[in-house]
Image 1: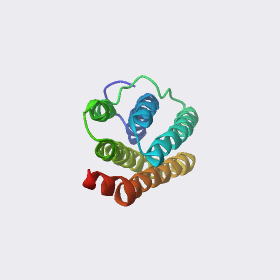
Image 2: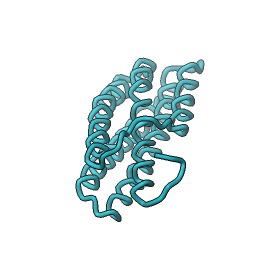
Image 3: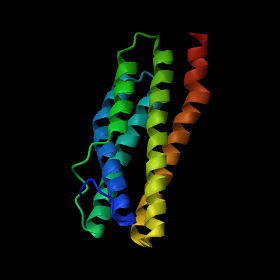
Length: 166
């Protein structure tokens, strides 16, 4: 696609390429986050989300294929920045529980970005009456919301309480 958006379909393709790039970058970052986490539940949450991210990438490929475009070729600058923040957190010197709280904060920023992106793409697909894309994007949107909820529960019920005592 050129640097010009000629239609809502072009905008949807642009959004999907951005999400594809974001998810691809996340595939590399999640193992680093899992390795850095000291809380076993947090480590497992990152590992589980890695498996989910692989499925989400496949879904994006399926949507792109059905819409007849290649999802590759864009770089999501926002995800690049969010991942850099996560890498910076990993390098921070901190007590384990405090670092875990920081890792959750970084991961939730990623989830919120993805929730916004998938919500936007789903809405564009709805407007274009692309029911197949709507269905697949809605599924991923719900997974991202659940991942955020899981991180929130971990923070509130385990990690932050321990970090507050450190």
